[in-house]
Image (cartoon, rainbow, N blue to C red; front, top):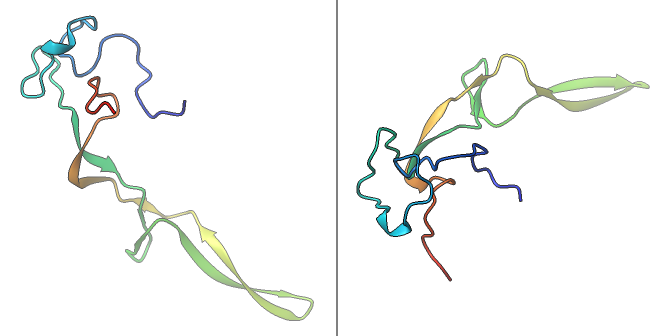
Length: 108
């Protein structure tokens, strides 16, 4: 229900081999064998922040516009969606465990 895990069927990305049915005791955090070595930790993520034309960094940018209606001046905020540059990849302060990591870490 609503997980952000991988939708790829087949072998686990952290198992090191194509066998998904091996013993759970053989899996080790210290050493992963095989040609597809993968770490269970995530060190970077894609940022949700954007730079505008002035170099300011934020999630959203708004511009104040003055609208005259029936002789009354009213100010509105208009969202800016053009000329924004994504910040890109950001290094995490503390590594996180990947959502597709196949070992139960804590059983409660």
